[in-house]
Image (cartoon, rainbow, N blue to C red):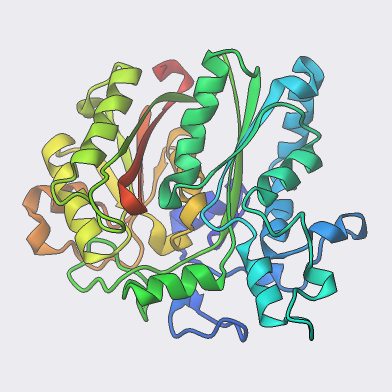
Length: 387
């Protein structure tokens, strides 16, 4: 995983332990905005290798750098050697894909009004570009799909991968989440009045909105036992409002019920909960009410977007990596920048929300991802012995 909280699982673990946020005042001459973001300076000048020049843009650089981490390419190569390239699939979640490259082309139109020649790329100016890029770099020939359901994209990618494995459409599946900062995301959220001028403070009485980030992460799913297992998933769609959640959180609760049923678990079995926690007033209120009525008072719930920023389509994958930190290392994240829970969210939720990281054995972890339009996903992960 590559994001504002670090490059690779070891760096992410260190960031969780130190509550070290990657959010900084936003600095981008092309996209000026007074806010804090999880922007990665390493993407500014690190062009792709010359052989991949036709793919070069901020989003593909992000994916390329993340692929180099934690021996992931070697793990995929081993899966290809075992099953064959045609039996290894790819599901990539992204809200914006390579739209930043198209935005750049529009900002620098040629005299004839068309895209300038260097940016007139049929490879890049398509929503499926990132998935095609990753598939090509990994040498995969199995099914390849882009999931774009806003903030739940890469969480839903896990669900799709599980179905492919269960239906024997593939023997292994690469699950990915990649989103780079671009104007459509930054100014789109500002137009909705949701971008905070300070670091985001999920569930805090003084919360003012989101801090966007950029990240890329990858996981390899296969059948059989493993150190970390996908125990269950649930999906739903509110169909309530174009951007706001259902006021009673009915869609989110339906996704939770589905995940628990698939895993044959009860809410009391959840040790650690990674909250969606956007730091927007309505979303936090609805999620807090859901957590208070369904989860045990002892659950360690935390909102981690103060560490990473809201990485949009990559958020499900990033937060799966944070669940892995809890499962593998017994290190449960805190809620960076949240000074105190909003009293309006109730005493029970205030006890569930943990502000500081804590060490404790973790057998089962849950992750919430609730996207625009009421596109909801809940993932349940467990250590191998919990499956």
